[in-house]
Image (cartoon, rainbow, N blue to C red):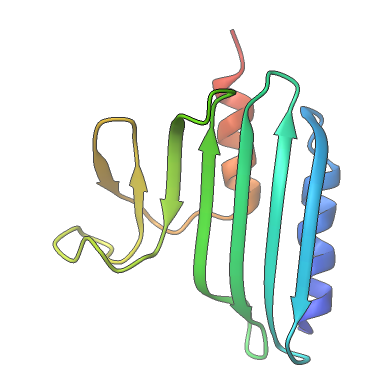
Amino acid sequence: MLVSEYFQYLRAIIDAGEAITAKEIVEDERSDYLGFFKATLYFHDGTVLHVREYVFTRFGVERETYVYHYQDENNNRIFRYDNTEHFPDLPNFPHHKHMPKNVIAISAPTLEEVLKEITQLKIP
């Protein structure tokens, strides 16, 4: 898959997000198969999701690095998924999720899964 096709897929997921009121997207195609995708997604309640993916797509989508940082209207973290290698003792290292008071081991989520989680958080 070309990196441009993967970026198109990510844009389609974002465009389908009904609660997203505004977006800023930066795509950096470094080659046919290597690129950096960055997005800031604004929600109707003032929350914001910062997205960063550095991907290699020649043999499938390999996210070398990713960050999904979700924060409230006062810039307080609600959660953050990433694969920065700073919690080596957690299962599934380096994948983890920062919660307000702790860090937990997780499997690497997709942007679609993160947006679904945000939608579920917003259900009263």
